[in-house]
Amino acid sequence: MVKSASKRVLKSNSTQVSATPTKGTEPPAPYSTAPSIVLPFLETLDPKHVYIVHIDDHPKALKKRIFVVPVLMNIGIIGFLLWRAYVAIPYYVALLMNTLGYDTIFTVDLSGAQWTDLFDIAMGRAFMFFIDFALIKFVAKWPIEFFIGFPGNPVSWRRTVGFQEEEIVVRRSRRWDETLPSDWLAEEADGTVYKERILPAISKKWIRAKTSYLMMDKNWDLDFAGMTTAHDLVEGGKNVLSDFSKTVIVHHEEHGWLTWHVWKLDEGSEEEARKKIVVFKDKLTAMGKENLFFSWVELIQFETSQPGGFTKDRQAKTMERAKELFEAQGVDFDQFWKEIGGVQGLPGMELHLEPQEST
Image (tube, rainbow, N blue to C red; front, side):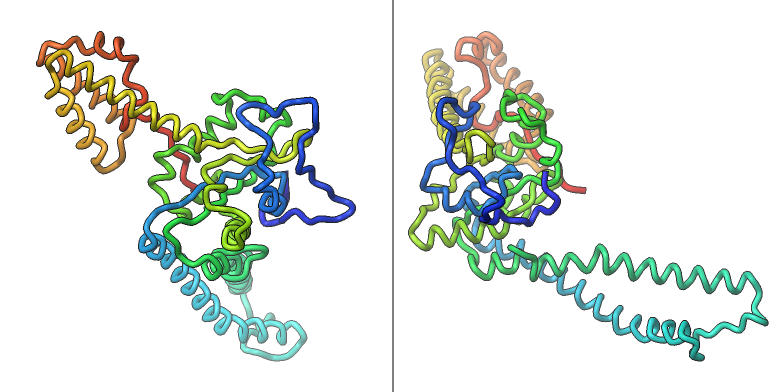
């Protein structure tokens, strides 16, 4: 959908981006017209991308430790590239002089050389050219984008925003958005785009597990310019942090900027979970099995704290152990869950959805 992921929307006479919806039709569910309070922020985004914003509340100390790693790595890369330039430049200068007809250490006596010698020389130089080309083409761009990338880069973001207890995170879809069908917004939540790209990236488990800089993967990149802009708007009093609570943002040709306020679903699910816990406990108490409730809590707390996360397989094994606990006290496990509406919604039993890491 766009050749460069770093391009911003430019206001000009030739390019106009609709910020307001067309009257007479409704945006496709679950989206709604973007609130006017966030339009100054949305106008800085590229309408060809899909965006996710949320608040990162991981500790500042963790964010600092995470950010030190790429800083040191990119400084190391710069040092290596400078050393390679120091070694290689005299070599290439001598080769150039040799090409111009001057005698240098690379001059080859063709009259006395065997073809195997010439082949070895040619292959050695070609290999060196290839390695240096790869360093310039692929490796050198890492520190360039990290320190001076435009319009935003990790260093300028941290220099402007610093490290805060609550930080605004703006994620931007990668090149997969170039092949999105025009009617993808009309898909149900179990459609391919949602199931493979969006839902894993907005799951509570994923967001709780990762601070912003660890969220870059095969599907999503961080929009450093967008994050800087969002914090500038908050510091300038034009927005508040809650304006950037977990939301999916898209641009629609007919409706303009649309938002899906995922944070409302999170709040609703947490309230439902609290209600279900109360029903769960009250049901066991009425049966004279209140101790079974605490045994269940201990089991869930233990299993969810194990290395590797509370995967589907571990959830299944936990349910088997829970069934043994219930049946040991004479409670029909399957019938009990039917009566309270099933296990879904209880804390610790969330659907296991996680984004795939980049390779």
